[in-house]
Length: 245
Ligand code: BV8
Ligand code: ZN
Image 1 (cartoon, rainbow, N blue to C red):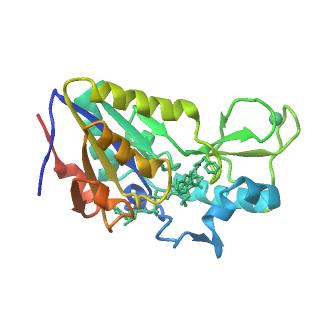
Image 2: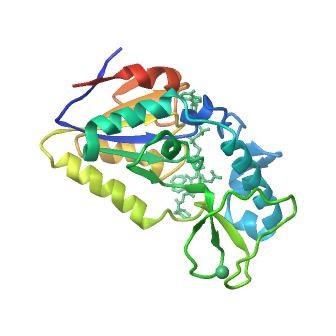
């Protein structure tokens, strides 16, 4: 198996998806065949879904808060913490996961591209997002105590734009890596490559001359866009994949 050399010349951008949290007991989207209570996740995790039935959407996220609070990071999360400690500012972790397990494992240089389960914001006023681990009772729809309108999970739903600041942080890191004179490496783990813009990062890295690695249990929709592909469980592969030099 090729080994990933992480030395003083290496700049590493990592992208993770639901597969990295699977060994912690968090169901993947594919694992649920994209459905929640026979509804396509895209339908619930969308502005339309919230407009149509905010109580249903809050039940969806309250259940996921409860589940995520009951699990723990796995060796896949921990390996990424060790890589970050070794590379420092030549490391950035972009995750599609909203479960907060990377941060709980100790990762610091993290971009939560699709938001965080344990944050809430107002669907109407400019009140900043706030920490909120509340598991709301079924049927409840919390209201904003600043403007009285509905509160919503601080999550990027399908059809919603990502926070431009998050996109900028990933692009800035990629530009610095690509012009550093060092080796720019991109590794994606536990992701099916089905959701954009995350699934398109591999193409941007290749255009910038970066090396590309995929660690995944099954072939991903964008597998053929990666030079190095390792089939396996991230919790088993990541701890032994890198040579820290
Ligand atoms: C946007 C938060 C502008 C919600 C999420 C271009 C082409 C086609 C479509 C589009 C496009 N550009 C935009 C779109 C539309 C859309 C999109 O991509 N749709 C898809 C379905 C085709 N994108 C958007 O809407 C984005 N916004 O583009 O805004 C815009 C606006 C209007 C109109 C157009 C454009 C917003 C996307 C973010 C949505 N929010 N999450 C929540 O979580 O509740 S996405 C959500 O689904 C996750 O965050 C993640 O991104 C995705 C699930 O994918 P994965 O994480 O990869 O998980 P999955 O289960 O699919 O796969 C797991 C993999 O792990 C599997 O391959 C499995 O083999 C592997 N695995 C399992 N166990 C293990 C393992 N691997 C290793 N070890 C293991 N143990
Ligand atoms: Zn408000």
